Amino acid sequence: MIYKTSGVCCSNIDFEIEDGIVKQVIFNGGCAGNASGISKLVAGMKVEDVIEKLEGTKCGRKATSCPDQLSKALKEWRK
Image 1 (cartoon, rainbow, N blue to C red):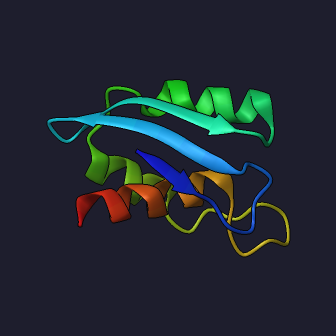
Image 2: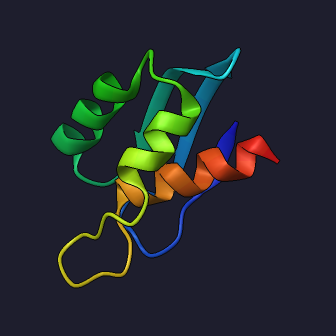
């Protein structure tokens, strides 16, 4: 699934879920090192656990962040 982000540097997040487990996450744009690190950390985690850990994370003075946008993407996937 591809999620169009809002309020962050990356333009979208491409992710794959299998049986409620995050298999792969790719942030397109943004801070390459941080995005790569987040992608590696959440791979293999349950969707619910990723949402719980990342939801509400802010980037500096912004109201959101790439990790927060990932939580929003996963919430939308659940619907």
